[in-house]
Length: 146
Image (cartoon, rainbow, N blue to C red):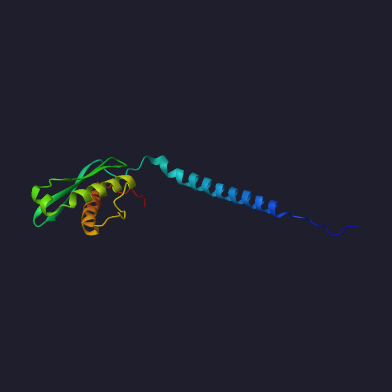
């Protein structure tokens, strides 16, 4: 005679089995993502930028101020102001310190599309737009197969 079988499951065992199953699923998903995205790298290293120094100009009441960005193939190397005259320093004293702060952030995050924490959003925005313009000139063309 076969009777009803009773299984006793302990809460501790259920939690342990659930955690192991969840870990296995996450590990499987990560492995699949790494394997599927790894196939595109066999074609060759993709460059973000064309190496060099690129300049963007800000006109301040008719006088140019140049923001220069130096890049390698995959990295932003430096961001700085050049040709800052004494007139610029007197009438726009915030440009140099804001540029130094912005440069630190751009180099840290390797992008100009950041939200810098500053008390001077207009000055920082002007400089950030100039950095973005210089990086657009440095951007390597996208190679898309159609």
